Length: 121
Image (cartoon, rainbow, N blue to C red; front, side, top):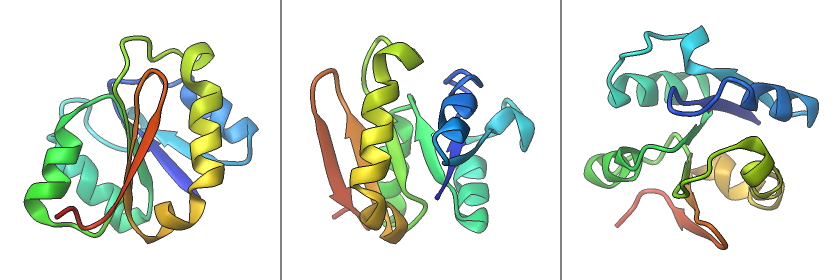
C-alpha cells in the first residue's frame, strides 16, 4: 500500500506511515506545490497511490468524474496533527486495506469514519 500526502498536510506524516510499513510520499517531493487537484489525482492513479488529504474537493472530483481510482482518505477535522489523527489513520489503512486497493473514499471526522466504494453514485 502506498500513500500520497497532499500539500495541505504536514510532510511529517510520511515518517509515521513509513515507520508503520506504509510506503508514503508527500506531494511536494513529486509535484508542483500549486498543482491543481486533478494533477495530483492523475499522478496518484498512474502510480497506484492512495491520496491522503484535508481538501474537501477530492470527494467532489471523484463524484463528478465517476472515477474508480485513486482511493482517497479525506480528513474533516480542524486538528490534522499526527498526535490527533495518527492512530485513526493507521487503523483505517489496516482495517480497510482491501477496499482501498479496489477503490474507495474514506472520510475521517472527529469521532467516526465513513467509507464509500468507488465510483460514487
